[in-house]
Image (cartoon, rainbow, N blue to C red; front, side, top):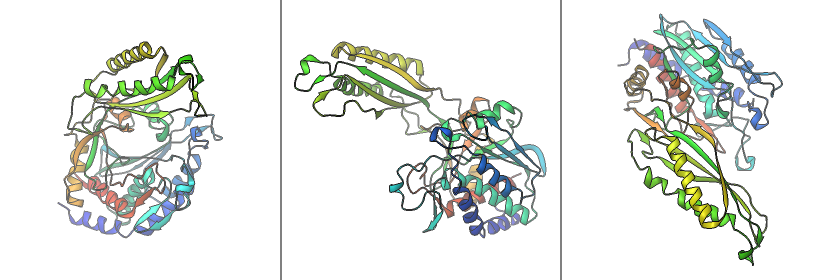
Length: 412
């Protein structure tokens, strides 16, 4: 049910298109790139966000800086803002991240990645969807509440963090380490950094992640005399085929996840030889495995090493396997958690749709909360253009997110 106050808030939010465009334009103009992407971090963007937030009546604002001597400021900022509610028994948290990924091949963009262009109800620009939409939608909700002089039922917190795109060491991981009591198990922790165009997917779980790097050593020779060498490329191709057997060995299905299976995919391949008429003596390939939590990563590593030995024996090569990513999935957020129920109710009332909890293959920052026993979820209305050329935020999605946030903030 939508009461009169909530109707007023939603009506007010729907008048904020110009505010949405203005804030997105300002944020996009500051490319908050990590040092891993030859950037200088998020400090300038954080200053802009603080300036924007100064126009709001907040209860407190705190910066939790993570030292990082790779950037000129010497730190990566994390901004925590709280707004007073009728009760402080719990906090409704909305987390967003300031950093963005590089634009990639600029020739594939139809517009300047760092200048917002509005077209067909969409705002194009790097970072507009990932993850500025989350922050701007939250700000629209709070703007409406304050202009209408309506107090949310509980304290509202904005966690605006750094370093999400490169592992969160200087972002939410640092915040949780430095301020372990900032979040509580009674809080509703919402991360609008994953979702779908209909707004019906509530991410409550994720798969374990195992990346394998395989270096295959053979013996280089002229392609016309293969008997004089050992073809590392041929051995790596057979290893890829061999690894496909993992699908048959670990074939459990879990309907909570999309897709409902473990996946074992060959991905990156490094250059070997520059010319056609040389048999390569070295080949380097990678696998990205997303594994249901019911399976042990150690057992899968053991199986991969068995495949490695089979190929070594068959082709007389030497294979070195390392695992640059090894992340055991945390326990999922319960489908009956208060934050899940709150989102389901809000989506039903505001968007007229039935949202459902699910697990995904990609890792999210919700995992860092879950590992500390905090029931966090990811949810948003997204077209999923993140990291691609011509990334955009759909204006209707941002407004819908803000209206759902408002519903959650008004729930008793």
